[in-house]
Image 1 (cartoon, rainbow, N blue to C red):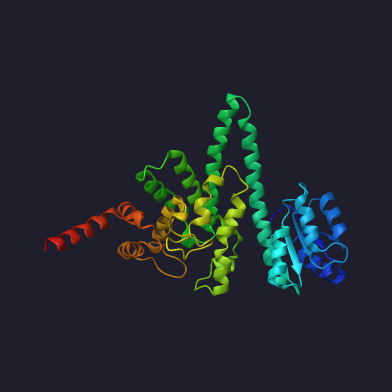
Image 2: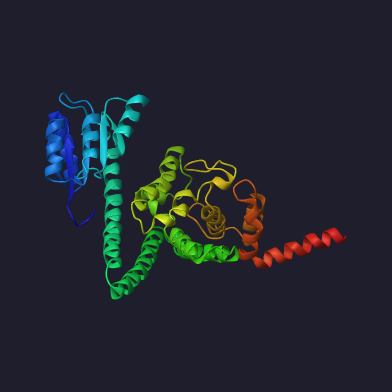
Length: 357
């Protein structure tokens, strides 16, 4: 857990539920305040801005949907994460909660282990979001100053990139099997971008996106991320959320918003069978189409917890066979000529020799 206290506001008219949630949250080292009604909950949220709100739906004065909308309409509380706790499990109720502005849902009776996981996920996402937002505000202030300040802002931008490198290394170190992965894929992505004559400013954003492509995995439990065997379908569903977590984390940061294409879309596939949005063909941003090739190549040619590395020949053949399925068919040959020029030349000689025969 973080060193700084994590403040949670529980809004529920049932005193037993408030006591149970308070007890659990305190074991998670949270500072807990409670409110027994929707109206008092709004007052409490505005008076002492919490880091997270747990909000009951069915309350006598104001229901949770109304409370959520009012909190979202108030600039002071608009960005506070809200987890709605409800006995309603129909689709219409969930949709109403989404429209009201809820970030997550938990069904009654609350599974304490699930609540613990959601709270820890929110803690991680909030912590990283706030860190980045603080750095962005500092950079924005510097850009308004004199030429000396402009030079200072440039130094800060370089420091940001060093920070991105540090973050990517920290992410890689969560699993020794993928150590160095982010640095390798970022360099190979740049090589392909340069071969395509992509403008330098776009290459910088691609590099940043490649370095942060898996930042959303901070929201994935270690038990799933480090699992040595195959994941269950439920575990895969959680794992697939990492692209959405990346979007939610990075989009509010103007400095990193142009780098979002890779973290958000690198698991989309050319034939539309990827995630998280099921994009197809050129609907997928070019940076993400390039990175999909880079990421799969690096994953196949390095050891992972669930399998040993493939040979470069096997990886070359797999990527070639996935032309027009997983990968953009216009990029595959160029990518293979950059990633494995020796293999490409050998295979080209074999093909041309076969034709001559």
